[in-house]
Image (cartoon, rainbow, N blue to C red; front, side, top):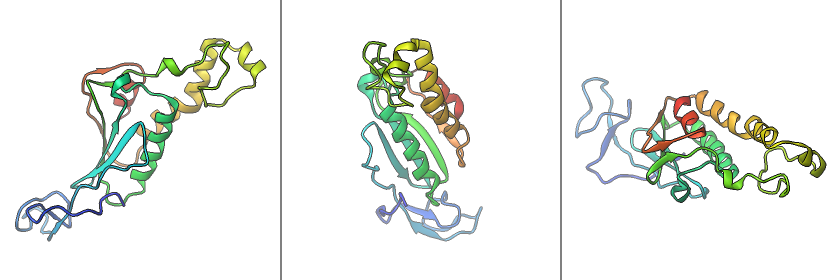
Length: 183
């Protein structure tokens, strides 16, 4: 579970609905109050942050502000893992997709996309052989990456079993717009 820590006694939440705050149970649901808290951020990630806020609010935050949160293959893999973690957490009630810095997401990180001459070292999505790679155009390589990494991420967000919300702070382009629209 993501939410195991406890808040100070002043922060009480209803055990039944997880939303009521105060010193007594809410009249709308009749539940009993319990202490709950935000879990510390999940530390197994380098390019994203994952945390659980009170009330079952899972926050997946893109964390590459120096690159305007541009999506690269490691970030996409981390996002897929984070989605699996949240989907498996019975305390999660909603997923909020947000970003650090002045922009939501600039789309794909094209600086990590190899040229024909470089080979396919940086792009880990379905790596072709050197001969296959040399024969493919940039468009073919982009289409391959879309089919193996980007599109499955967008589908995972779109088909996520909990309500999802995007908090778009600043610029969103390409895959960033796709993520926002998928929620």
